[in-house]
Amino acid sequence: MLYTKPEITKPPRTVVLMLTSWLAPIVWNGTYNSDILNAQFHQRKVRIGLTVFAIKKYVIFLKNFIESAEKFFIIGHKVHYYIFTDRTQDISKFSLGDGRSMDIIEVKSYQRWQDITMRRMEIIWNYSLQRFINEVDYLVCADVDLIFSDHVGVEILSDVFGVIHPGFFGASRKEFTHERRPQSEGYIPFDEGDFYYTGCYFGGRVQEIYKLANFCNNAMLADKANNIEALWHDESYLNKYFLHYKPTKLLSPEYAWNYYYGSPTLVQRKRLVHVEKDFKTIRSK
Ligand code: UD2
Image (cartoon, rainbow, N blue to C red; front, top):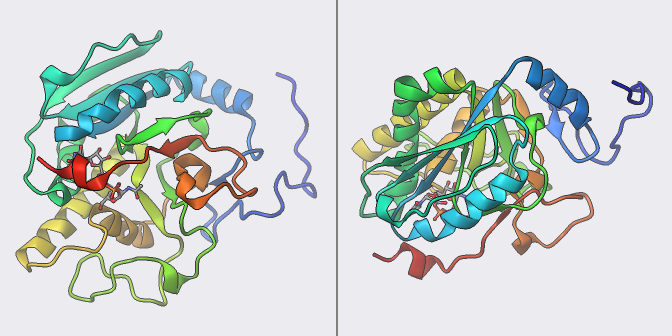
């Protein structure tokens, strides 16, 4: 395979951080070569599971999510979709590309939207042992109200990856909306924290996601027992996990963009973008 030799004195991007202080790469456009990565991952014949929850009215987002994933998500590798829903009858048939498959798994719903979003961790943890570990090598876990709008490939894969939240990549620690009450398991003091990670997208090897989901679920249950709920629910517990168990790769906000934050030049591509939603309607019964 022919490609340009890497040059020690010529980093591909100079205006963005490409490596954390614990030596995890931060993935930005222009910093990697997809051909090399694809060849490496093909040699290992990796299988990737993509989990997504579409509970109650959120089923309306599923069609665009899957159809866009079929265009852009880890094309050319084995991908298995795990759709968790309480409305199996409302899920239409999808036509999937070669090497791609899908399971629709019925789960119960919760009354409060906060419980729906938080309980995803319990289900991911449970299924990691029951199924995922036997079926896929990596898991990617995403919100359903997202659309893939550009290439998302194997460059995202690592032992455990998190995504820098689009609203906070230039923010100070103080501005991070971490949980600040010491009574909560999600608590992060003002002088700690590396990045603010989005709750809408994370992944890694199944064994690692098992640990991550177990931590977040236990933190949520402990808080529930104490009658407290972290400010941003699963996102707060995820941020706490990543503070102590640092991700081995970080994805730049290209990988979870929200046009609410405009279109800064640093973010050259918007690969996965948020769908605008009317919170009141979509979260009502
Ligand atoms: C943020 C996070 C989200 C989660 C949540 C917790 C971002 C972009 N997303 O999103 O990951 O941490 O905050 O407060 O930062 N869902 C259903 N049915 C429901 C409710 C939720 O299926 O009735 C699922 C669905 O996959 C949805 C996800 O849970 O995408 C998160 O819920 P949300 O999109 O309403 O949360 P949001 O936008 O506040």
